[in-house]
Image 1 (tube, rainbow, N blue to C red):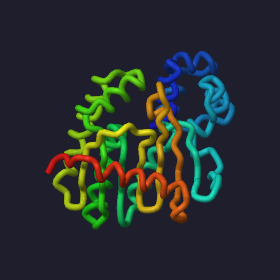
Image 2 (image 1 turned 180 degrees about the horizontal axis):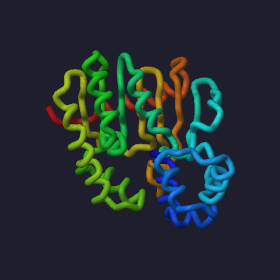
Image 3 (image 1 turned 135 degrees about the vertical axis):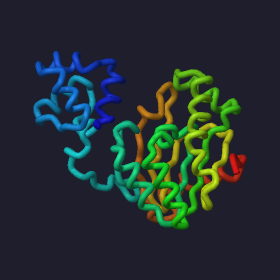
Image 4 (image 1 turned 90 degrees about the vertical axis):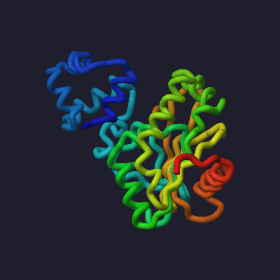
Amino acid sequence: MNNNLRYALAAARLNTTDVAAALAVDPKTVTRWLNGRTPYPRHRWAIADLLHVDEADLWPETAPRPQALANGIQAIYPHRWAVPQTVWRNHFDQAREEIDILAYSALFLAEDSAVLNTLIKRAEAGVKVRILLGDPDGPEVAARGNDEGIGAEVMTARIKNALMLYQPLVNVDGVEIRLHRTVLYNSIYRTDNELLVNAHAYGTPAANAPVMHLTRTDDSGPATTYITSFNHIWNGAQPHGK
């Protein structure tokens, strides 16, 4: 399943018939691409041009492995939806000491049963898991919903849905969930010294905003800045569940 391509088509408000017509192929061929088959290069380039994105956004496996951009900055993805699903799963699976998640809802992770199972298994192996979600009754959540253009009620519902999906983690030793009332400038997904930081941009859903892959190399690097931010929010948040 190529979710990157699906999200890009949805964002462009195009369907399989539209793409098939633009590329002069059978709609069934486009469906096969959506289901995970990798197109020939000429078709990949044509689709990328049609959607005004890079080929690597849609098929990350075809791009060369990125080199570190600077000390502590490993890569930058143009959108959160462009981060391959396997990257998210491997990111959490590699944790040996701690996992930190800071977002308003992180619903895209809660809906991934493989990620939930990984969080449970990592906690059972002794990894400390801390999850920080927005307080659904807080004004910050309402404001973020309006900022994204989806409305306060939808954002609140997303958080409540996420909390329900995270419920299997509540009674697992080593897992703690808290609710925060903070204006977030980024969502943070940390495992040990590796961070995926999803920027927040006014008027833009988090899924469409960039993600930075950071590695903590020393106490003055960018990763440390976000770890410190997480800890400040954690210390002022209210426990949930248990």
